[in-house]
Length: 139
Image (cartoon, rainbow, N blue to C red):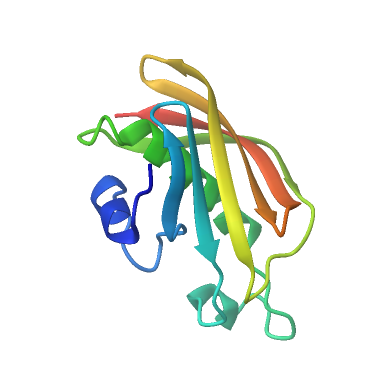
């Protein structure tokens, strides 16, 4: 199942400039989602991070994973809100720069009532860029 950018805006509560995913290319409701992000040199955060060498902030990489996971959780529950509850074991292996094409995945490993835990990662050209575990509180 593919979800376009316009459809993403109906699922996620974010608006520009805070949507960190361009589209979802694979999904299994409440279990898994895979999205893509084409990183542009015009991204707002490159104005100050860093002037000598533009690098996507790690916290925004985590946000991208969280948004992909939230889409998996919310596609069948559109009236709910997935709040980021926690981050564990975040690791950053390679910097993300303008021109990078990112593949973002999040697999839900546990869902209990109003809580979800997911494992996510970002790859570029098949190489791991970052990985983390995230938890969600569903409202």
